[in-house]
Each structure stands twice: as structure tokens, then as C-alpha cells.
Image (cartoon, rainbow, N blue to C red; front, side, top):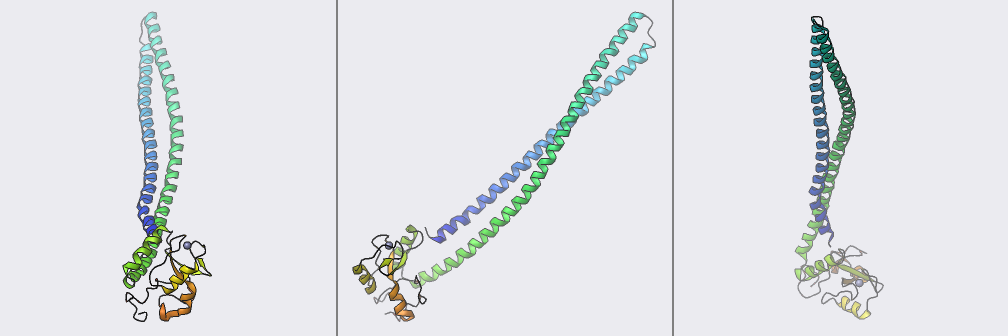
Amino acid sequence: MLRIDAMNEQIAAIPAEVARLEKDLLEAQKGVEQEKSALAELQKERRRLEGELMGVEAKIQKYQAQLMDVKTNKEYQAMQHEIEGCKAERASLDEKILLEMEEQEKGNTASRALEDRLKEMRRRTEDGKKALADKGAALKRDRDVIDADRQALQKEVSPVFLDPFLKTARQRRGIGLVGVRDGLCGGCHVRVLPKLIQEVRRSTHLIVCETCKRFLYVVDDVVASGPARSPGAPEGASEPARPETGGDGESPDPRVS
Ligand SMILES: [Zn+2]
């Protein structure tokens, strides 16, 4: 795969990474909201119990007042019995309310912990999104530079030569053109037959390494011929900007033909 393809893939993957961060945050937010609504339910239930308790207290007071007016012993005992029943109810309500309060205390602690976690997650999400945006921008900048280089190259080199070269590059980890140095292929480091090197030197057509199938040029030739024959190749470069096109009139450089 060409480096530019890998970059485009990385750039294309960024929105999904951002979406994943946002989804995690949303889930944490939902957790906090659930905890809060559970707490609100508890509070409602406690208010209901407290209302009930007030009713029972009022009943007890009413019965105790009525106790003064009873005429018979039987009536007195019946009233006492009512009062005992109300007191038992009051004790049970007190107990329930106490349990609810403990529950609420625990809930408040859990809720605070969740909110702290959410705050931390918000911060991490923002940082993560910023890092991804920076990464995307840097990738795009690099990609555009490479793309501009490639477009300039495509303008200068005939597709007859460039297309097979790019195809090979895609199949060979981004490197489609390699130099032969000291008789070895610069791509796979396997010895290149002298006969083949001779053909590359004559450069009437594109020659590939028999082992890795990358296009070959001879490093010594490029250096020795210098800018007059190979204007794209810097002195001593391990990789010239374009394959030698030969004197067949295809070359855009008038000095070659
Ligand atoms: Zn090779």
C-alpha cells in the first residue's frame, strides 16, 4: 500500500474515533442521570412515608384526647388498643424512614463519585478530540504535500511508466522503484544478474527485479550521470525522482533526448 493510501485511511478513521469518545461520554452522562432519578424516587418515597407518619401521630393525639372522655372501662381499653396499634405503626414507619435515609446517604455518595468521574471523562473526551483533530490536520498536511509531489511527478512522467510503477508500489509496501547497488537489489537485497543490470543501464524499457518485482535503476549510473541526464535525482540519492525514460522521445526533458 502507498503511504498516501495509508494516510487517507487514517484520516478517514478519525470521525469514528471521535464518535466513540462521544458515545462513551454520553453513556457516563446517562449513568449519572439514572442515579439522580433513582435518588429523586427515594426522596419522593421518603416524603410519602413522612406524610404517613404525621397522619399516625395525629391519630395518636386524637385518641389520647378522646381517652379523657371515655365513660366505661371497656371503652377505655378499646381506645388504648387503638393507640397501641398506632404506636406500632409509627415505630415501623420510623424504621422505614431511617432505612430510606441511609439509602439516600449512600446514593448521594455514589452520585457524587459518578459526577466526578463524568467530569474527568468530559476533560478526557475534550483532550482526546483535540488530539484527534490535531492528528487529522497533521496527516492532511503531510498527505497534501505528498499528493502535490505525486501530481508534479505525474505531470512530468508519462503514465506508461508511472502507472506500472505506482501499481508495484501499492503491492510492495509503498516502494516501487529501487536502486541496484553493488549488484544487489535495494528492495529485497537479492543479487541482480549482470545481464539484467546491463539491460537497466541501456534503459530502453522498464526492468524489474526478478525476486521482488520492483523497478530497478542502477545507483552508480544515476550518480555518475549527474544532473545533466537525471535532473530529478539529487547527488548521491538512493532514490531518483523518476525512472530514466531513455531517448525514445517520451521524456519531457529536452536534455535527455
Ligand atoms: Zn528485488
